[in-house]
Image (cartoon, rainbow, N blue to C red):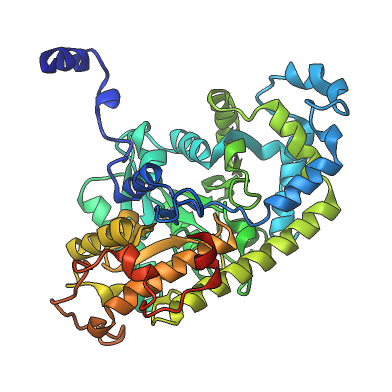
Length: 484
């Protein structure tokens, strides 16, 4: 059997038998742990709670209500059937004009209408994943590189590298200044790449940041624009979380820098925006990715390549109607920000009750949780040991900072918008119980001293038993009692 498998492997491509997808990352391992034992309040109350998936389910009811009140928006209803033939047979890769117009208007609205977008520069793709890959194909050749500030979304290793053959060069950012990008860090990364004979063709920023949940300020964006213009490299600005900002400071798009900051020189041909409706609207399954480039050649090439990952015309038709409903969009964005702020407040205050801090943030669907005081040693091995305990004993899927290429051990991304209020309370209950079991050896964040005798594993009793015991250090909430 082994010989047969080896012979079969020889018949496949290097891509088919390689690990370029990055699936071996702890980021994806956590998903697998959840898939094998998913939490359900009644059927599996001791299962793994999924907090490693950045989905926005807090406003699904608003969308459902709109669909019920606008049945003609779908070609698969009696009210919309008259448009079925025309929409089902449309296959122009430019996309439906009404769809591109609606997306351009929505992009402007999520940026406070401070900038406008040209519908003729809107290029569709299969989600942000497809949009990033197509953009990379347009800008770089195999062996070329993009600078990427760390920590960054683990999927970029797949989206930008796997099939394109490019490299990602990390730009160092750390907690000393709340992971803010600096000009010196950009210069250091660029020079290091040159020393390694790597040709840097571009830079990728994520604004708002995944995993930090922060927005870039105007000065940082100006620094980035000046840097890429000076080095004559491309800039790709991932802005897929632009409408998840729920408090000040406001989100500033790279488009605003180009339009408003005319005192700095910039060749617009070097600037490209990747957008999506997966996070802002909560539509990851619709696979709506957008490339917006100021470069005519990139627009033309990307549009041709979009044939490999178009958005279905049925989806375009529905979303064009929805996004053109100004009253709905206004109400949706306002309510979404309100609900995200509330969930963020509930979750971070719940963590704070047991001394867990998070990086101050105001955007995204997650927090950057600081568990450095729970590590045995300030090493990545200790971070992975703690992560395994959280997955297998606390039974919560969170993502370790090392999977985001963070060089400081002890940071974890925790998603909070992909579940209902009850699941959030149960997750907080589990986290608090675990932390209090280790309270005597926690180290204050500011001191950064490390104890080697941290009891990461609750060996004397099962974690489930401790959490639900009447002697648990955390008072059991009525929600937990009602569901277990």
